[in-house]
Image 1: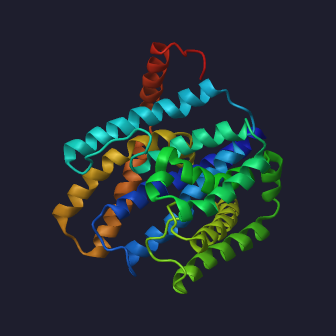
Image 2: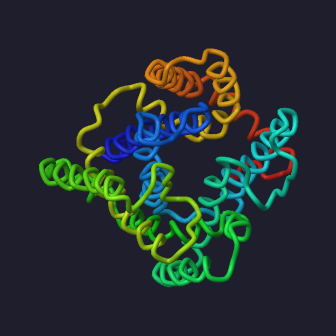
Length: 323
């Protein structure tokens, strides 16, 4: 039964990692993110996708992990891929400064997750949640966005309560959701409609991202509301997503997709800038390209070489047997 429950989470992770790839392609496609198909899709994705990854990470973090294990699974990949991406950015001319303690582009997530796992298994969860909320309210008053981004700490404090919600959701509770399809569907649809309503009422803009920096405590409160919406949409996805093999594979290999896909965004941006197609056609190509990239990067052969590279580095620094 555990395999079944984890399989359900893999399916959601597979759907989410495709949204990650699609969202980054929409943002980098050169189109205006306003009241159009680009802006609306981008908004819907960025409202929930990374917070839901944090929620699922909490669900899968019941067992304590040693610091060495966290170091090998998260810190080493962060250092490698963040460094490679910065070099890639230098070559392409859009990155001029590098600070390993301030993540580049998408790599904040893996560092954020590592810190969350360390905190959760070293300090009582309730205490960390209270501290996280307090610090999150203090941040916009005292610190800049640069400080907020330092070691992903701003996002750690912002999203940690959602991580703890995930930890509280046991596999047995997930099993019960399958017997409450109508309730989950209703809560999920209501949450989704609220996300649309907030945009329509002008409470947020098309460039909204629940996991991004906030300038006021009012915006922080809205982010907490969106985290509630995220839980609701999670319930919806849990009961409606089909049990498809490719979605499971995407979910199982989501880390590899996440780490490598940024290098495909530049190629996609270059192609779309040359084509100069009408928005609808450009959007259709973006959807297709994101599906292809997600599927290619999820291939087990790529995961195999990724594991080989990571194992090689771990052995070189004499941490073999940890992962």
